[in-house]
Length: 387
View 1 (cartoon, one colour):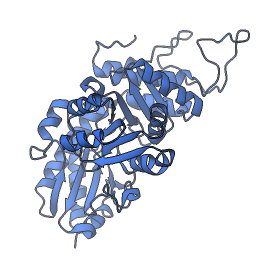
View 2: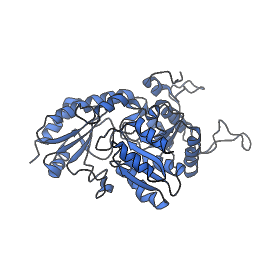
View 3: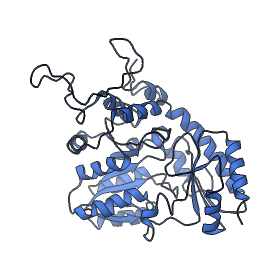
View 4: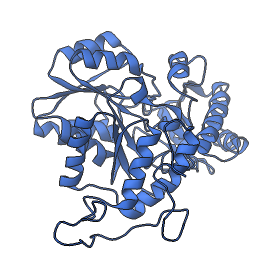
């Protein structure tokens, strides 16, 4: 069976790029490790394969799967999320161009744009993406090539109007890039809402098992695709065959996992909301979240990421982070196991002292697929350790 765009998400997740192997009928396509391919005479390539950097059947299958789930036409798989972002920016910008990005962007993205590509001549302006007038002004003030947004954002869980940003970007001749890592293709499809490019750290929900690092870029425009594909080939930061295979395997169960992640995220957020130790719960599934109604319009569900701020400040946040047993204190997110992160000193340490700095009383929770009652019990005992 092959997937079609008229089929549901879970059907496409299982079947896109996953046709059975014709010689034996194996329902799981074989994993191709070969670095090079025999030619039928000079230039006689079999199915276009020549060398592993330029093409690999396992990676191509993943790319087909990613494009089908993000409603794109072309997808490119990379060795990490930052490698994907770097290839995108170098493919589509030139020195003197400018990027307007959210003032709560992932620290690694900001570090790449400001400290690596800034030396190449790419400027940037962080701005509150919820304030469309400020976005419009920032875009107009520079030679803006990209408007770059995460929604939900990491870790402040802000929700941004993708359609409105697309209009602002396009009116200025810019492109809208959406980092869809937190939502995943199951909960949100930015290309269908007007975005030009979607980026992912496939390490997170797409891989889903905390056992593979990767990234992806998905587009619908043929010209953009050609430029991104060239940089993928010419620079070579591609995902290896095993990484692609593990990502494909994880992606097949994305829908059912995201349903459970979302259920657990909602349960944990509602429990946190009632705790006297808590100053604020940042989760778009709560009616009191400022982006709740917008999230309902552009997302299927609200996901498994919850951020919480403590009245006891940094000492309380640190104490809870170091007192859990079901939640593991670790970098990353989106795996089947629940993780807890102290962004100020971990994922976002690179933006301390800047406009993008994360509050020191904030913890980021990645709610896994365990039983919600056990997650809440773990948090309850950790809260009891707060002085």
